[in-house]
Amino acid sequence: MISDTLLRAARRMVFAGVTAFAVGIVAVPSFVTPTIASDGPPSVADLAERLLGAVVNISTSQTVKGTEGPGAVPMPQLPEGSPFQDFFDDFFKNRGGDKGGTAQKVQSLGSGFVIDAEQGIVVTNNHVIADADDIEVNFSDGITLKATLVGTDTKTDVAVLKVDPKGHKLTAVKFGDSTKMRVGDWVMAIGNPFGLGGTVTVGIVSARNRDINSGPYDDFIQTDAAINRGNSGGPLFNADGEVIGINTAIISPSGGSIGIGFSIPSQLAAGVVDQLRQYGETRRGWLGVRIQPVTDDIAESLGMATAKGALVAGVIKGGPVDNGTIQAGDVIIKFDGKDIHEMRDLPRVVAESPVGKAVDVVIVRKGVEQTVKVTLGRLEDGEKLASGENGSTDQGSGDKATPPVSTASVLGITVGELNDQTRQKFGIAADVSGVVITDVAKNSAAAERGIQPGEVITEIAQESVGTPKDVMDRIGALKEQGRKNALLMLASKTGELRFVTIRMD
Image: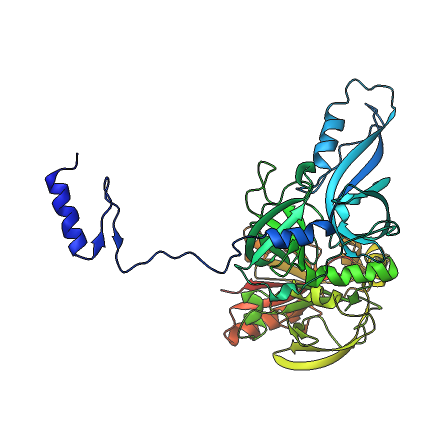
């Protein structure tokens, strides 16, 4: 029974404009009216019914050897959320009784969706069909069709399949514009989690532009719509039934959904799909530069008001800008009209640009903003060129008698002249020029930045140095100017460049 004191207190609260609920009083101000958000759809049944026919289950099989000991097939390292995981676990961890080396079929399941009903084009994740011997597409009406692989892209984890549309009516969906999605917008995922085909889940866009370090073009949509193993390759729909993402990864300590899933945005995926359909491979734009982030220290050293853009650490020989259009030390802040806020923005916008396109690039060079015109090459050709460049080293002859090396110490590093003797000692290529670092003091600012003996200082504050005296003079001049940091351009033994800032206090 409620005491008289409690009742009197409750009455006072009511008179004071507060409603009391006994027992254990929960006070809610009378001027606050609970509301239910009206933006969310009261039911998604109509939308789901319209889309279910376009979403398919992908089943694959792969032949593997069941041997133990030398020559045994190792357990594959699979991405988190891969539908292969359970099946590989069952096979590799429970094969102890198989000593005969007989081949076995490993099955896996994933999801996909039809984007062209007339041509029979199906989109899924690359990791769903990777290394598969046979691929089958299972439709919601129970029909199963053999699929052939049109093309894959490992960088974005996208694959395109083709089935024969004759004799079976297909339902297709189209890509929407993922750039229009806002955090909080409703989304729907349909897929084949744990082999349970035709599963519909609903959530919202939790975040955009997520970088989960899975590839060079990470720009994921994060959603809390339930995504589990087997959902990989399935579509993420907006409220209009357009595909704005391809579900590809989850974060989960248990292996099940905890409301953190990631989808490849349609803005990125659609272009890849078009190229795979047209060429069977990707043809991405290529600028031909090595880049690194613009930190606050680097921005201060370059005279920039804010840290933004991508710092050019080197130019690849034979690349599109090997003519001096863009130079090491330049900061790219805009590419073809798109702002480059941070380093990871640049590879993505360049890759999305057509090969051979002439674009305007806004750079900051020695504190001055300017615009240059660049004609893009093809990334796939550039990767071959870059790998060949990195693989060739010329360590010099080192057979000439040289006088003792003059040295200098500054900022915790000891530098010396770069000649045949030091080239041979540190294995420095003949085309690298500057001042060689011969020693780095422990616990110094240079050591904290990862600077090592054998690296070569080619520039300080964007001015070339060729002798230890040049290094001392440049550091001294920067201190006189009141600079707090020294910006060093360092070359590796093979000539790869990077920028490092060292505090001078």
